[in-house]
Image (cartoon, rainbow, N blue to C red; front, side):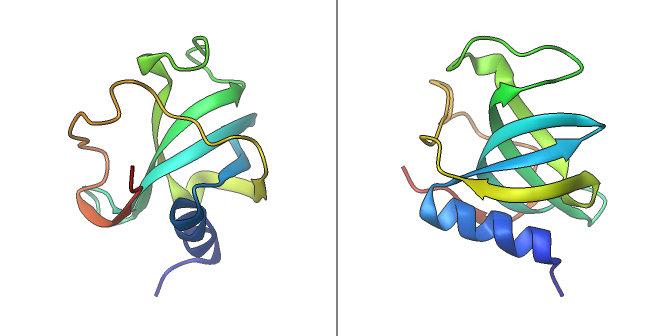
Length: 107
């Protein structure tokens, strides 16, 4: 059984839409790229963060350092937004965030 947040993020991947969410008390704007289960069997997603705040800082849009691997259970106040979908030039690099991939964005 998947969570409501998981299903919302999964649909965002299918539609190439972004989300707004709170993570570790910080507002983030994220483009989801992959979703499934992490190493621990918990719901996990790979995002490209293009705006908002981050504990380790946010590089300019398009920078390869803005990838975020986040546990879905730790996201709060998740809603879709209508910003242009974002990615980085290294999007084709094999990801290791989501161990059991349910869905990845189609390029």
